[in-house]
Image 1 (cartoon, helix red, strand yellow):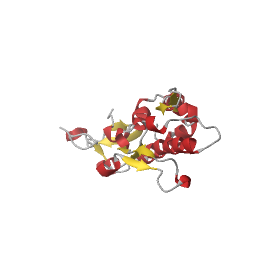
Image 2 (image 1 turned 90 degrees about the vertical axis):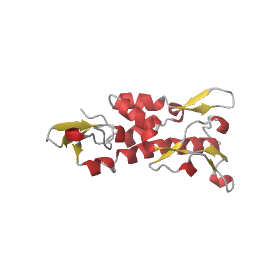
Image 3 (image 1 turned 45 degrees about the vertical axis):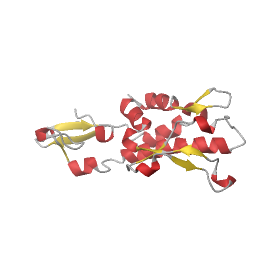
Length: 174
């Protein structure tokens, strides 16, 4: 039997309403880490020092928000003058479908998490060289934001059996 992100039948885990709504703050941590990288990308494009020469037209990295708002899927940012960044196309994904959430779920420990975060592909330079999160030195700060979210959560089933949940709403119940 299916139901929510908390199982079904007697395999449901409780407290179901808390698990489905901001259970441990993992979504908040994923959003912060993801959007931190977005800010670093935009700051690097805007900055004259330590500029990686990122071509804004090639950036694939999107911001995330825990809301399915179709109007935010494709947006234009950086409007309003030079102090507001470089105009470019961007957009939002929903938090549970983000690459950071997938990385968090796949990481085996904090070092592995840092390595995976550093391997996030951002886009290309004007010289057509790939740019990764590690080039912006983002992986350590992102991992710090996710340090508690990587830990599994102990809950119980309706029958009172222990269950471990890890990884947002698409949690695996063990």
